[in-house]
Length: 336
Image (tube, rainbow, N blue to C red; front, side, top):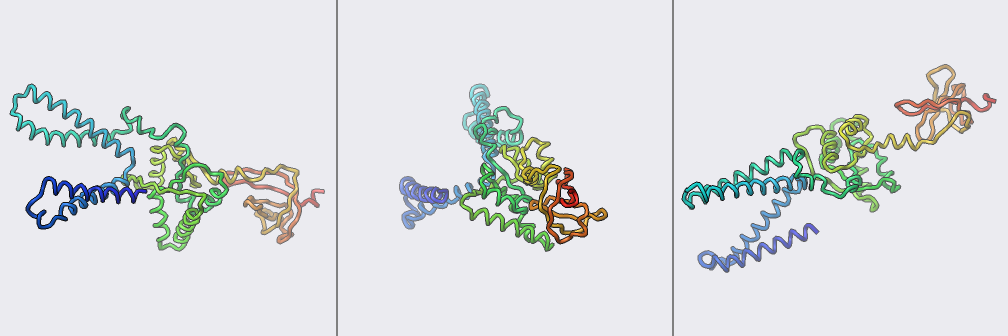
């Protein structure tokens, strides 16, 4: 649709250039080269398209700030010029020449002032909350760590994650830098992240949009992600512990996949029985270690001599730590 609009604009400017050339500039070169007017019109349309391509890197908020600031500056210029025409006693032609310079200066100062202080001006409220109430909660920003992790693709395929997925351009650039790293481990992680994105893109049930907003004044991707979340009212999808805490401190909502995984782990209580396979020795004497399907560690008393065996165990206690959950158990036949 955008490409069609650009094509229509190019054709329209070409026709307008031809019309203006024939209507107002007939004679001279146009008699010898009648297509020059259409060419100049096409060039003008091409310049407009280039401006469109440039402004797409700016957020709607910044563009509106510039427009409103310029309008305020020109309004102040108009008031001053009216006072000058009525009371200054300066010749009209000199005032007109001065007015051109004054209009440019006030438009620039107004745009810069509003752009720098857009968060402090109450007049900015109409486009600070640009979307309807509650709509901002449907925006989900993807973090680099959660893309490399890969579980986000599975979650999206189950349709449990609602909202619009946005991939900031600076996150994609960081992912590409990791994929081009000289470190084999980082390179593999980066390529895995790109593969996950390609998998999600090919899924018709998942829609990912590239968000072009960037903050050149910030170096850290995490800081850019938090600022973008603040501006558009979106949630940050991550499994980075530090980013989680920083975002929460600044009032940005966070969706942490690790917390989701811990919440979905099956609840077990002492006295229940389960089947586990002892895989290795434990830290303490005569202990064996097994793992559940979700990665939860099960420490089996007396399991060292049964490494490699699948046996029935009875849960004796459950310990919740920051790293996860640990289950302590002993063979069912011994408990009896």
